[in-house]
Length: 234
Image (cartoon, one colour):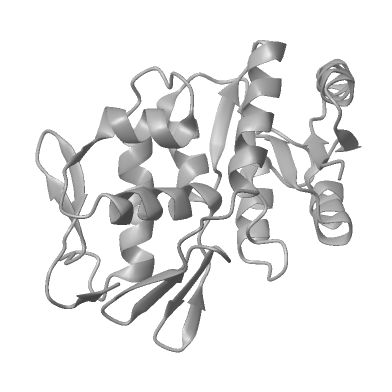
């Protein structure tokens, strides 16, 4: 089935460039040039992926991202932020609010299409294993579902992939560079802060006390590992 991508950018030439190349690669593309319309399209069309410009009239990209992540039914749509700025703050803030990825203008069209394909391929991937339980948290890999106690935990695609790879390698130390390569699927310019941001999000969602994490442990100067002990069940 043809995947639908929502492209949100207020620069007509950029919007058309992205739309043309995504359609050329076999995607169905819908567009918006402001944040308010983007949010409405996300709610009504439920696209498989959103390319979201940071600087938008009406409602900026960060607010759109934040609203999508709080909106039941569309909260798990993968979001790739587009920014004309190169500051690390903009990228990290976007990730803090739930964006799965970012790309900086000027960008390579080939890279943009490759990222779209990679994130859609991963979002549609179903794990053969059924589930894994630790503490009060149960993960259904097949359904990409996480339950803590009696409540569903909403994870972004990247958060789920990060948790999955840590669990699949429980007890082993995963370096930040390894996690970047395996989860993002391309050279991420060594920006390991990306991993740290997602780990922080995961801890807030699955740990009982994210300031004193039990399950996702930091290995100083190296990376992270999933703590494997007697309280864990396969």
